[in-house]
Length: 334
Image (cartoon, rainbow, N blue to C red; front, side, top):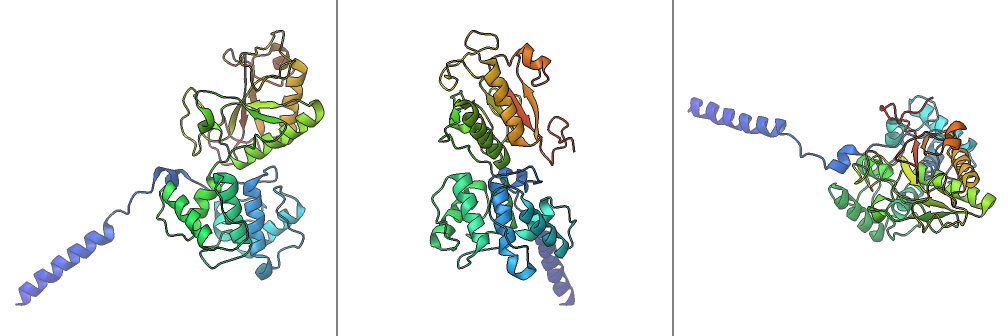
């Protein structure tokens, strides 16, 4: 009898052991690749607004500096609030957003919650996904529905609650520029709208440059391939895989760069001075994060504005640096 009991107990232990060591279900490729975006003073756009709204959600408890508004830029109130939050939570007080700061800042929220954190969620869904969602700061059934939809689409369990993992994938998610802006247009490639995605900062830098350029010249920046929605290989390219690269057409003397292809440096319709001004506007808008412009115009190469490449005589290839990049091609100098 004692032996049978021991054998039974041993069997139960083996079953329990197998359950304890059984590997967890593999994360979806999207979830596995997603990481919180690193943000510093030069960043702008949707991810910065998320940061600002999340800081405001902690304002009462931690007496975060007043005057913090969702401007989309790292202004003085945002920097002070972030420093205070980091000190309060035992994080390195450097006013830069990394994964640890994001994780401490983004609360778990769900149906029935309200306030700036819910506003941040709704704004991210609206801007990054383009989905209809109430922008009222109240986590009701409509918001829960789109959260479930997003979770299911990226490979998360559709709980309808926003955990750190859901925040991470949503913050990492790319977005599209607004081609409704008067200084920005989309020219078609073989990849179509599938390739119109970039990081929030790249989108914001492009849109800001387009506004600057249009105000100064009345002309439009023509944007081709950026990246896919979740990055990864893009047909026809060796790069464009991480949301920080863009192809642009050079400016034409007749202003038809949005609709006419095949404008080569040196051709009679090529507008070198306007192309130069476009590059300057992009540099100014990107605040030193635009690190590489490839375009085979000998004059602009001689000026140090572009890098020569025979395959880039009819379009410019731009690369912005990534704060978290290990690849030297994408690493920031500072």
